[in-house]
Length: 201
Image 1 (cartoon, rainbow, N blue to C red):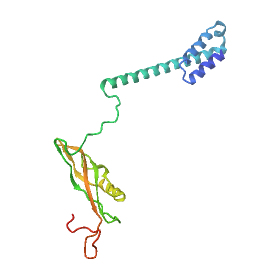
Image 2: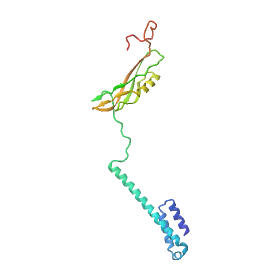
Image 3: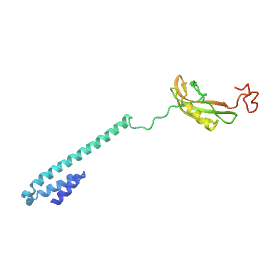
Image 4: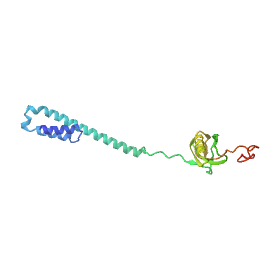
C-alpha cells in the first residue's frame, strides 16, 4: 500500500498525467475490507483522494490550455494574421525608368584629395537614396584611388538629396556620380611638366 502511494506521489511531483490513475489505484486498494477498517489507513484515504482530484484538475486545465492555443492558431491562420516573414524591400529605380524624376542634390560635397602622385584621376560612385533623400549606402562603381575611395564613400553617406519621384511619389533611387580628381599643380613658368593645363576643368 505504502509503495503504491509513494509511486503515485512521485508521479504527481513530476507532473506525470498517470498520477491520478496511481492515486485511484491506492483508493481501490484501501477499499479492501481488511484495510478499510484500519485506522492506520484512514488518513491515507483522505490524502490519496485529494491528490487524485488535484491531479485530474491539473490535467483538465492543461488540456484546456492546449485546446485554446490550437484554436487561437487556427483563428490566426483563418484571419490572415499568422506570423509572416520580413516585409519585402521597396523597389529601387534607376535612370531610364518611365515616369521617374531623378533625385536632386541638396548637399553633395566631394572630400579634398591629398594624393602624392600627380595625375588626373577619374572614377564613379554609386549611391542608394531613400524616399526621404537620405543616402542609405555608397560604393565605388569605378574606383579612383584606394585611400580617396574610402574618404569619398564616407562623405557620400552624409550627402542629402531631394528624393526621386516615381509616378509622383517619393521612391528609392540609385544615382551614379562621375568623379574627377586632378592632383596636378597649375602650369606656370616654374612648373612645366606633369601640370594641369590652363584650359582644363
